[in-house]
Amino acid sequence: MNVDSAPEGVDPNVPNVARMYDYFLDGKDNFAADRAAAEQILKTFPNTKQGARANRAFLRRAVRHLVDEGVRQIMDLGAGLPTQGNTHEIAPEARVVYVDYDAVVCVHGRALLARKDNVDFIQADVREPDALLEKLGGLVDFSKPVAFLMLAVLHFIPDDIAYDVVTKLRKVSVPGSRLVISHAVDSTPDTTPQALEIYKKATASLSLRTREEILRFFDGYELAEPGLTYPNGWRPEDPDAPGNGVDFGYVGVGRKL
Image (tube, rainbow, N blue to C red):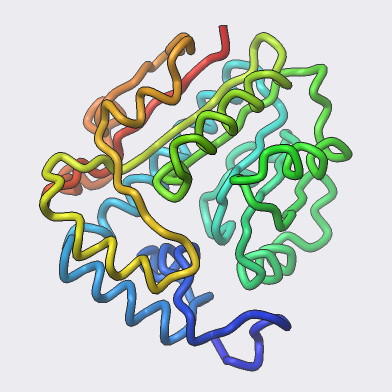
């Protein structure tokens, strides 16, 4: 990416998590600062790229499952770049709204999605659910089932806000709506300080949670088929993805009671 392509107000010298993820997926929408931070992460967790690919593979399978279940409105919260194999390509008949806070991601995402009537890309912060829902109000029919995709988002949200986000998404959703999560989970907490230090320099802080800590946010949700499982339950493309203290691809499909 050329520095000149940075939108006004974006500092290309400050790494961004969404653009780092783009780098892990071999994308081109990232700056030198993003690549440098991503390479530092890879030194701590060498399998991060495999984990990102496993997460993207899970997204494809989850969206196909949602379509089979009859859901035709899909909100991807913290979407990153809508690269190949993403939601709107898997569910071309669905109403798809991508949401991300990063201005660079939004600008390039809109360019990639130009002239697609059933797809929107909005800039919003999932940590501010009221403002997010207000923006979605003109794009989504909340009287019908909606699926919210939250892939790796919870690691960047403090506990109290995470509960608020999940509660408010649940409140506006009608029966048949879905909450889809996929997160790498920390199984050896002593390995995280290095990653935390790197993310402190990025535009989003990181709290790499354990499996149990993530489950807390979904108390009261019924697990929908195929349930809550590690990636081998989804036949991941890369079965060697888990490792280095992190169980990459911890996944689940949650359904509102």
